[in-house]
Length: 301
Image 1 (cartoon, helix red, strand yellow):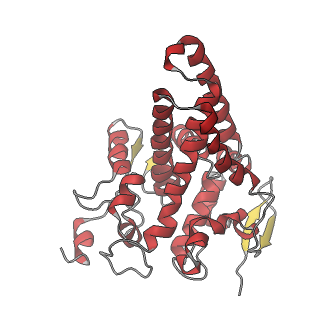
Image 2 (cartoon, one colour):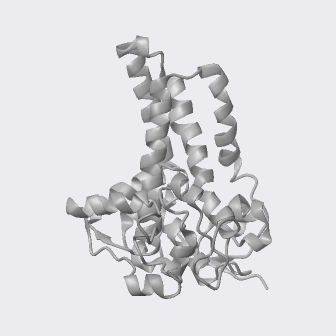
């Protein structure tokens, strides 16, 4: 039986429901255009500064997704101030993975029903579904906001959710303007607005998007299981490097509230290292991790 998904209107007080699993072709046109635009690289060319910009934006936005969208908004693994909360929510929104409330709501639903028929992106329904098919449907275009009442009270977060295209547009325009400025200031760098737009936004965003989605798909199929969780989550070193630590997915499903997902020193978790640095600066606090006893109890170490 199809389960219902609920969401609020612009006044945050009217509830609707849907259980439609069909592809919403009109709404995914931007998703298709996002990928096709990467082909423009054959016309705009490449330069070191454009590649560096793409890599930097991949890194900072991946951190915003992993540390804030995931560990903070979905699991409340640490506390921070409202300004810092908004800054990283806005950076995460520029990743074109929709708003932080929508993202957190679906992820909390995933943890409630991981790898079952009620999981929004269960790999049991196939790789393509768990990787990207689920969020292209009418059913999951909206979210169950009853799961994230702790965040719907912030109007700035609701704004990012309602106008989820705003931050990607701001980033794209800023990159184009930055590229044109560099073209005027440093012509020897051989870059321009269109090149910075293609590399800094389109290519960087597409790589970032699919790297994030691999946690939904491959991290439940490919890797090792240290803990006997109720789901089929796996630890994968390569995915951990690609996603700044999210690849330690079996660890995460064993103790989801931990801000540290690489439980042992040899498990590289770049997002956690950066969170520790932010804690030292006083930007975050009350960071939760797993105790050594719980970590080792079911690991056989």
